[in-house]
Image 1 (cartoon, rainbow, N blue to C red):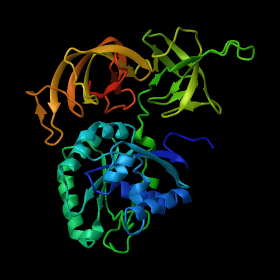
Image 2: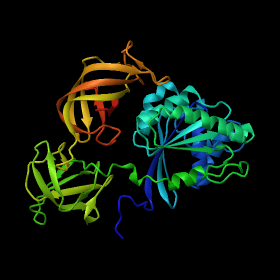
Image 3: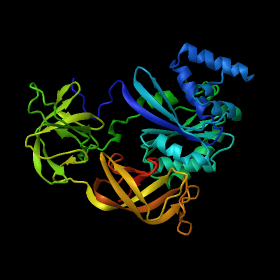
Image 4: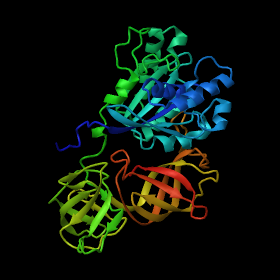
Length: 424
């Protein structure tokens, strides 16, 4: 049976990120998901039991399943982004457990940049904090399609429906200013396991799904852009063997739209048009390709196409330009240099750029634009005007996360210094 882009197919990969203030229970929640879905090995569980006993704790401290660094275990906090993989019969999952502290904003941006779902944890006793607003805003900025607000530690407020409803109303009022399409609320206790994998008997008033049910069933197939055809060429395949003597294919990952055999396409930057002769994958030839498939496209005519070029539709081309407005999250300890020069990577293109102007710095807590203090340091988010040495083929980030994102690299140290979301 042929799969279509809108089908929810078994074994589909869902990426989700967790965010919240310090001690909101993110690591415990992930530990509970892994434990209750039977996604951990016996030796892992034994190691965690032993570590819990050494610390004099009652029972098993599930947070230790994700706190991989010794410094994290000793302090009981998450410092770096911890990636965890697990699977159920319905889906595969990659979790990015991101830190809660303000000084790790860059880690959250890194962990959340490819996520389909963001879990925002709120401590039921404390309600919405500054960190809650910050992380929700970053999830909105990164255009994460689905937001799940997990109101945690319900066991410590006697599973009160009133507390849950109050926090829900407050979050809904705040989130009306955010650009998030789908928000869902679940009352949970990560420590006790209420509504994480199994339904809670302590909250009969809650009639929605458990967190695991939501993650297994949320529709993510249409999160991709299937309208605007974008295929950045990553590699030119020329086997030069007797069997494939005339084979010339362009390999890469579909960044948008649906490409079909026989379609008329346009090549950027040359502007030449041709047709798709065939589409190959690792499993053989296919009739069509759509995000996030990795394929090799063969064209009917021979043109000079190389890495960094893009295959699009003639009547639907991305913006082509050298002056770009971006929201940058600064990663580096050395501040952003006005008129500084950086290497830039966008889809499969590499270029150099200069910071023409810093428009404003964003106060993540109030969402206000600060025009007075334009000193952009680590973890700051700012709107910046870049000028590139060669034209980029791009879309606004809100339209296509693949063709609308870029990174800046310090040419001297080769460090990634910023991640950017293209505004226009």
